[in-house]
Image (cartoon, rainbow, N blue to C red; front, side, top):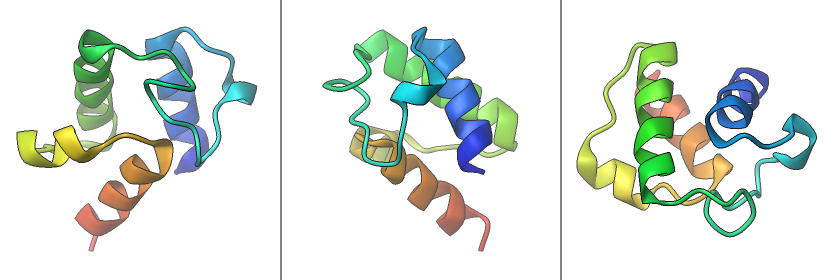
Length: 75
């Protein structure tokens, strides 16, 4: 799941996959602004066939946050 997520993040944010790890902060480390974040959430929703509600989306700050959400959603 991490590899697929890294692919999506790299494509959406225009960063190297090697620069993305679970501790990466989407804004501080990867340069995502609010529009980037919305587009990233939409790409994740499409790829994993899920819906991330607005409340949860505002809490997503790191790659690990996304992984945690995806794991919780798959339960």
